[in-house]
Image (tube, rainbow, N blue to C red; front, side, top):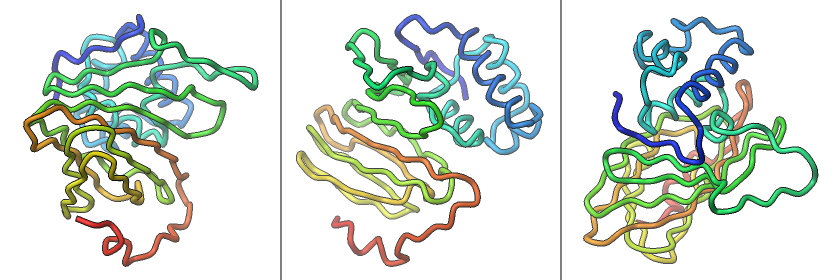
Amino acid sequence: MTGESVLSSGLSMAELGQRVRAERRTRGLSIERLADLAGVSRSMVSDIERGAKTPTVLVLDRLATALGTSIARLLDEPAHGAMRVLRHAEQRVLRDPSGWERRVLSPVLGDVEFEFMRTTIGPGVDAGEFAPHAPGSREYLAVERGSLRLTIDGRAHTLETGDSAYYPGDLRHAFANDGTGTCVYYLAMELGTPGHLNHHEPTWKGQLDD
C-alpha cells in the first residue's frame, strides 16, 4: 500500500513519522495495535514511523482514523493565537499516485478535530474507499467543478457542479470521478470522539438525492 505520494510544504517523511509515533505513544498504543486498528501491516507502520516509506493518502487516512485524529494534525503543528492566515504556499498538499490531490485549507487548532480541504480528482480516477471515522463524525461536501461519484456505505450518488451533500463520517465513504474532465470539490470534516453517541437519522440515505 505504498506509492510515490508527495507531501508538499517541506514536510519530510522523517517528520511525518515522528508525528505518527508521537500520536501513537500519546494514546498508549503499540505498533501492533495501531496496525490492527488501521488495517495495515506492522511493518508498514514501523517503516512510516522511521520515515522509510511514503504512505499513500488512503494509508495515512487509515492511520489518522485509527488514532482518532485527522490527516491535518499529522501534517502540521497546532496554530497559536486567535487568527491564522494560511498562504497558498503554506498549505499542506498530498498527491496520490493514482491521480488525485488533497489540499488542507484549515489550520490545526488545539484539541479541535476539524479539517477543511480541497480535493482535485483527475478524469477516470477512483480515490478509493475511506474507513469510518469516530462515531458522531460529520462531513459536508460541495462540488466546485466536474462530476463526482460519492459512495456512502455501498450506495453511490452522482454529484454535479454546484451540488452539495452531508453524510455521517462514521460510515464508509468513497470518492471517484467517472467523467472526462477534472473534478474539484470541497470537504469539511468534523470528527467525533470515541464513545460519542451517534444520533444521525437511520433514514438519512433517502435525503441524499442521486
